[in-house]
Length: 310
Image 1 (cartoon, rainbow, N blue to C red):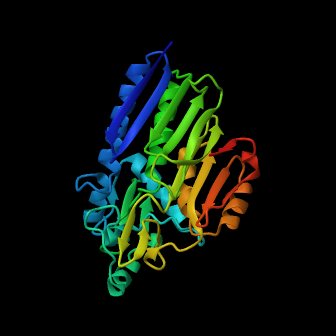
Image 2: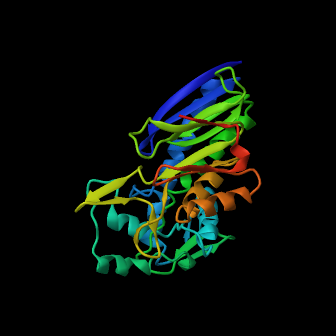
């Protein structure tokens, strides 16, 4: 029985894979190849990924795609159609318009924003289960799975590790953390830091103990644009075309599946803190931590005794 840690720079971030078990190094290397494949299929920033091909061709005719890509688009559409959801996988044209996080980031004019709003409607995504094909019924539509893809990747890699005999593992896809088995630090639980949204990266507001779970945080500090004295973040309201305005600085979800964490950190980000805690409390096995703009922290009752404040 051995352990191995593989650090990869991929998908625009630093990825850490830890595995303990038979053939740990071999499994970690195979997992790296899985992630390289996912980037080729799912990347929104590549002109050659299958996701990019949808923008070029799927408005002309249904386009058959990789089964995993189809599966994630279907899940994303389902959650995007929910009336109170702030997750919208059809948000691509708005992301490209603002370009927050890229060197060409700018604040678009009201008219430019209005022009793309009609392209952001998930009901215009037509799916054919029999053929795994996608049709975008409005020309100019563009899917962006960036809010949920890493969670899906983490779950798939962890399933691969478990199927091949891992007794302990950790996947960190640039902030999407998923753990299994005992921590190598000598404690059964794994300790995961929750970023302080008001301080530089690496400063944590709290540490949460988890076991066989995932932790994902979305926050207004991740990608920002300051222009004319106004601070804009990268989490958008696809109804208005502007960044979400509320009292939440960061939202952390703890759940068994990393994909669920991804979905709900975005889906609920436009709600107020009390509503987030109420909704998370009603879902079996889910925990939530909210840090508000005035520095207050709220969390679900099932996390009591599992959070260390810093």
